[in-house]
Length: 306
Image (cartoon, rainbow, N blue to C red; front, side, top):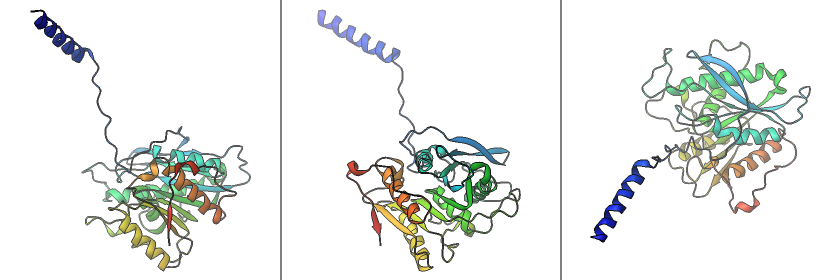
């Protein structure tokens, strides 16, 4: 009898605990495109345009003790997320670091159509992203003086879908917003590309095919991939081969062994890729000195593809 009463008491306690305890739900899974494990404060926010009735913003990180009378290169990075997701968090860490090295660094929001949503102007999901990316680059050039940026030394790039967007925004002469200021082009002097999503889907228009618009003598680019990025690396390899074939001797590819898509968003790979990007920019006269990141304790390394 005592045993039965004891068991009934245990059951009541378990039920009470289940009822009174808060329900803990797992956080929604993020795509590798969207994931950034490095918390970094936001930069200074600016609205660079309005599209589809919504303001589009970018965050800018400035060098400490900046003398705007002495313009410096600017870098503008586009987040990934499958052309329909992701946010500015992805490149805050990179922008903060690049600003600490003397650049004016921006990370950009852009229009993203929802699944099944159509653009009134007939543009596809990927095309609207490219249009806004062009506007962001033009905005930085237009406001170069107040930002302390040299408009002739703009660097661009991004991760996954953002890498794709940055390439098309600077190589495809079409997909322009008629509201953009006239006479400002979207040319850049270098690219920082983190596993850019360059594979073309069967329903994509030719206007977003990155391989279609590779020009001769593309400005120098550094491109990073994980060796296990089976979905996107093959198209990246083809783009890299075509760029080099057309005469861009300054383009480099680096791989992270056994890493998958989006590896650059977590440590130690975030700082390893930034260290190589820093060296690359210094090599092309866009930074001075050496990287201030110490990655020696990680035991990991990137390997250059020759």
